[in-house]
Image (cartoon, rainbow, N blue to C red):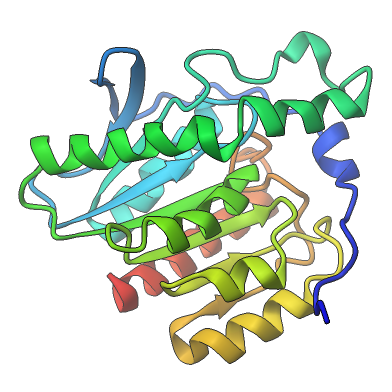
Length: 251
């Protein structure tokens, strides 16, 4: 019998717009393979790397700001591949005129079959250009949380731990399938995640993390992160500190 709640229709993901950000990222854009750009920040000679899967708005300055904080806190190389190849969800259709279109976007542009080879290409890039790296972690925002859990199953030989802030539709079954430790940091908008919390505790014990940010909205660490808000800024820094502690333990 399933221990997961029924699928949760994520209204916040369909209604909360990205913030307007004037942040100047600290990193640079590098080319991965023939067709994909990648945002890269942090020490080139680091021994640890984090791959970030962004939310539907792609290379947003606020998401890069969180990537910069993570690179600094963990003293790691952080890379964020442009898995949508320059075609994130269009702001001209947000909020979506038809919410079903957003679900279709996840199952087409964000499908495992599409993003899996691009994540593998990113890992290959790290191996080739940063031979000092001995362990890799993964952070997924929103829909990237779902992809993260699958990576911890099918790419567990290459990724040692994974985390997600404000994940989209992550279930207890997703956690059960993971072969590496996982951390989940939901906002108040993710619905009932008690089954996920219980499964993390059961499967990963003190190697895993579940911490709810009940005063934060969906997206508070990515494109919807309002760093001009004192509370949002403090909570994002707190989440980064939690991620740093998680990866320090598991990478």
